Amino acid sequence: MTSPAEAERWKQLDVRHHLNPFSDYQSLKREEGGCRIIERAEGVRLYDVEGRELLDGMSGLWCIQVGYGRPEIVDAVREQMEALPYYNSFFKTTTPPTVELAAKLAQLTPDGLDRAFFGSSGSESNDTVVRLVRWYNHIQGRPEKYHFIGREMGYHGSTMAAASLGGFSSMHEGFRLPLEGFHHVMPPYSFGLAQPDEDEAAFGLRAARAVEEKILELGAENVAAFVGEPVMGAGGLIVPPATYWPEVSRICREHDVLLIVDEVICGFGRTGRWFGSETYDIAPDVMTLAKGITSGYVPLSAVMVSEEICQVLEEEGGEFPHGYTYSGHPTTCAAALANIRLLEDGIVERCGKERAPYFQERVRQLADHPMVGEVRGVGMLAGVELVRDKADRSRWDDRSTAGSMTRDACMRNGIVSRAVGDTMVMAPPLVTELQDIDLMIERLGQSIDEAYQGLRAS
Ligand code: PXG
Image (cartoon, rainbow, N blue to C red; front, side):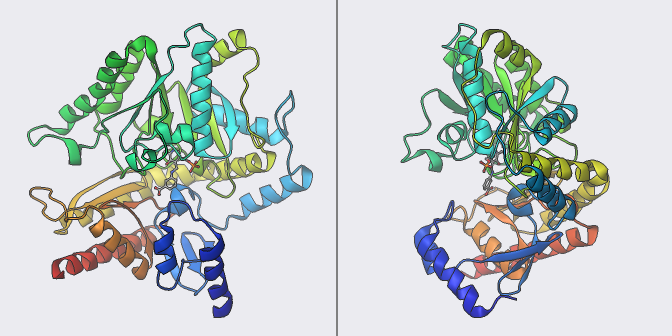
């Protein structure tokens, strides 16, 4: 058990020496009691240095599919480290877990995606996509076909290219981003963007056709690819209408634009099936994977590439000048193989059949609360959007107040939920027991109500 003095020392060190990602440093410094320090975890529960227990309704950052404390992954990592902790896959070498994992991913992912390029993060994988796709067009003698289309509110990572693919203006301003050649269209966010007289199906088609309009505006001969998450995560858990992906797929095919699906959040059972592409019947040319690939135990990502693209690389490409020191890292690949064995051993199936439908049913019960405008979700993903007035969907004055108040209340009530503006997001581990789902929803509901009472009183 950590002593209060030791906990205090860590908090001081954090403020003095650590630049936390996506943090307001002044407010971190002011934060009463300092940063929360998580020390250990088991199953779906986190424990901080003060000994407080929190239910992890976010699977870390959308990644702990199999829950914390799985000895199978720990053992696999230890055994691999003992045999070969590191070797690279540059210059005509590879390692056994690297090729075993590549083959496993080829088997699990949709037909036609049979080869993997490895990295250490979702951002790296999306950077790989940009380089790979531009190279693919370059070696075919069409270098002008280099433009990418992403979506406003899309999130693809923090590196320069990944942030350019993403559609967050807060990540562009001040960084000279997006880089040249990156464009964005409206997201399929019906609660916020549909016209009053427009139904889901019609809105989905309109959002998809924004992709086509952008292709025509840029000239199809100049557009390399469209990139999207099956369900948008960090942008506020945006679940597309059923009409959206079939129309986007048709448009990409018709204009010879590659369809890149970012499965960093949706992959490995998160949407109730193995991949979001299965849930939405998408046939991607390229797919990016990270997070759930190792359940976050160690950093690893992959880009799955279609045979058509690989054939061109093989026949026309020569050497592909791209790679990372840790591409195909044997220890992380061994962790992924152990994690996937657990997922294959009934976790994805049971989640899809039992836990996810139960989670969806329970979270939708929050829709009755006067501050809840919409509950949306699929699989083990849910968004609860908070409004001032249900009838006209108006917001509390400062968009994010209701969200940040609810998030703070969640922490007090022992549940981790993420606030994206005024949308509360939940993405619990795929192994969450039904009674823990009950507890999570109860605590989230109570926290929404506490924030509501607070907002009404102010
Ligand atoms: N694609 C998607 C769809 C993501 O959600 C990335 C790529 C980038 O992955 P890396 O491993 O480079 O972080 C992500 C990451 C949040 C949050 O608060 C979301 C992410 C990362 C950090 C915070 O919602 N998603």
